[in-house]
Amino acid sequence: MRTNDARYALLERLIDHAPMFPPASLAPAAALEEDARAAASPHAFILARLVWPASALAEAESTERPISAVLDRPLPADARVDAVEVPPGADLAAVPAVAEIYVETPLDDRLEERLDGLVEHGLRAKVRCGGTVAPTAEELGRFVRACRERGLVFKATAGLHHAVRTSGEHGFLNLLAAAVFEGDEDEVLAEIEVGALALDATSLRWRDRSAPADELARARQGLFHSIGSCSFFEPVDELESLGVLPL
Image (cartoon, rainbow, N blue to C red; front, side, top):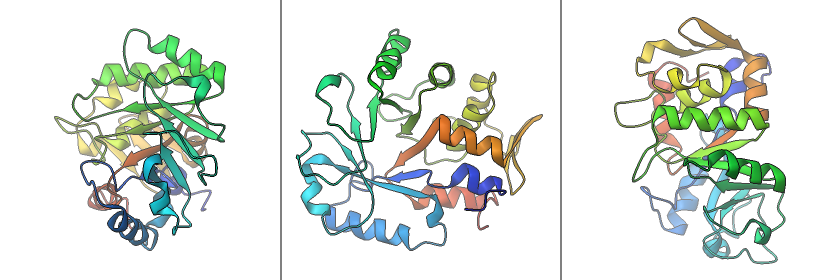
């Protein structure tokens, strides 16, 4: 890792690759092939874990990639996983003992209460940014602030293929910036002007705010862990179109 490069600090191990999940929905063999292609990419420093259904773990035995298992069924006792991802409403007391556990958290009136419960159990949060219904910038900003206030690490999933927010989808650079620029979460999440967000070797910038590599690294390590994406290459292509990549 180039510790003085803001692009590495913000993007390293950002994408949890989920090729078996919609809209990609690849079969297991094709999903493993696509993940191997991502791992061989010049931009593989952005690649984090392979996200895989717990019900299909036997079909991922050939890979040596670290796995985050989505609990669509109970985890086998001998499962080799680095993390698990838990659907909303699950019994937290029944979650298996794994180092990192991400619990999907609805953005409803009980958000703060739910997050307090995660802190109590030593768990992490997971937020859905797209799909059937996408949260508003204000709802997502509330989530980021609440996690920051609690020192609660989170990951995000769904609808984050664009770097910068469009009229219908959140941008992953917007969400990263919201984790960095405390106090401006709603505004930066609502930003749709591509030129207003910029990332280069020196800093991440939004309007009149900027953050160097060390601040970006702290935000990634202490707040925003990763994004789940069924595609590795779509977010990478977005970064290339903005001139962030190649390094």
